Length: 290
Image 1: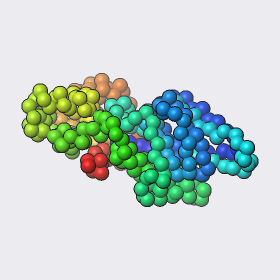
Image 2: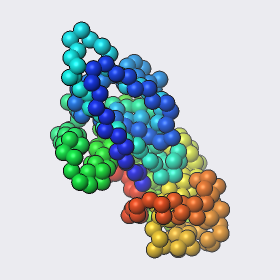
Image 3: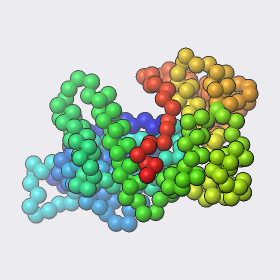
Image 4: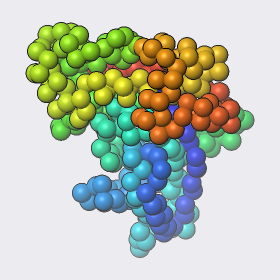
């Protein structure tokens, strides 16, 4: 599961400079109007962004945004930005987090019509000042980020992690099964059989593509899903443990804390402090399996 939050609407006139240090979560900036330059160690060179372009820093890498002074620059030249955060469930263990680069840019002119429509709609909502726009902006940003990931996966020459695995028919079959039924009693043997491979060949290929051994991936995926399920007060911790294939609540609690670094109770208390979100089970977008 991924949560996308719009946190700022910036309007800058003339010459300006924003220096952003490394952040605790992923970030994105959508250029609503005007033009700006983005610089980061994650990029080979500075890139100029035009209206409608989106820059994404999935790991929150340090970066700067600027507009340099020009002879023809007028005081009323305005650059507007819509900025937001990307929160991956399970933090660094989320498979999408591993698959994405430190920084990538989606060009409005090269993206599809739907991407341009969504970005234009976000700009319209910001400018309208309508009641409840924060909720609407977050929903639109979530859809825009999904399209951005699909655009990156389609254009990337050097695919890694989840994107590379989805290009391997046998490994993809196993990933889909694990994602759809994480509580199944998964073993190296039954995953290898599903991939129609020997145990050793499957383990080697899976680890090569996903950068973690198969059983470790199963555990990480269960914890990712559990984090969302824990936010649903209608389910007890014992029920979640059973649904995810653990024999006891105590065993599940120990494993969850070891993998995530926090206890299930901590997740529950944090959910009490924030608006309730539906505990949707994250899936592999079908559009990526091509």
